[in-house]
Length: 364
Ligand code: SF4
Image (cartoon, rainbow, N blue to C red; front, side, top):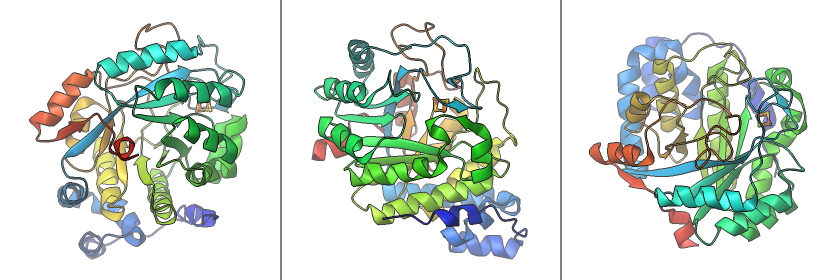
């Protein structure tokens, strides 16, 4: 089953500025076809209405449950060069790959804080983070972590199947940008340089039985961040239609300071960020929206009332960073430094239910 890759590129065309009447029509009948209108500067005066509509849709489809998860960085070794990343192979930074036993210890620390959904994260290093290593990590966590996902390099169908057999539930593959030219500029060497392989990886994971699929774009990487938001939304809806038994989530992180020193081509303001989240919620009402600790607490608290359904909390972005912080390079700086308990308390105070356990895993 191949996806309509050509269509993503079509979003990069320049579009005429919508009129107020067109914005109002788009708000009355939001769809992928008019997402560009909802994201446009012409829609910014309607931000409050957009946010209110998004809030209603989120409450209707997802209720007041907000799933909490923690990233568990297992390695920052990487054989790829991505100009925006603090783990890029050319950077002289402190590298560390956890042993399986150390992964278990980090996971135990997170479970003790309440987490039952962990995301194993690594750079792309086929020797240090081999498929066998990852299978062993998943197997070791399975007895006490109900939901394990990965955000690593992309794998073959056979490897995804092996990981599913070991207990893997989710896989996250950010395309970073759907602009092929920009993709080639910022991915200068290594496995990740292959745009098509990366784009197809989510399908390979789905066909191997991975039940939670995460995709996303790094806003600010390409000059036209709105085009990337549209491509992510289109991609998510496409995945949802083709793999209807899976759960699809999107994430739209903004670029944060890292050892790479990379600066976004175009900054995305907080108001534009809220507009993007709300617009995606309206045109993709069944898609989960994930928000990381990259964003500041006050913005996260607002977005959870509008569109977000899954949040990380208390995150460390360095391998071993929960038990032994400061021994390895972090991937990027986080903004929301509250503890998981503080984030859960914020959710409860706002009338939401922090969900630590994983509904899919309980069903299975
Ligand atoms: S984005 Fe991933 S593949 Fe690229 S340098 Fe960072 S860790 Fe490596």
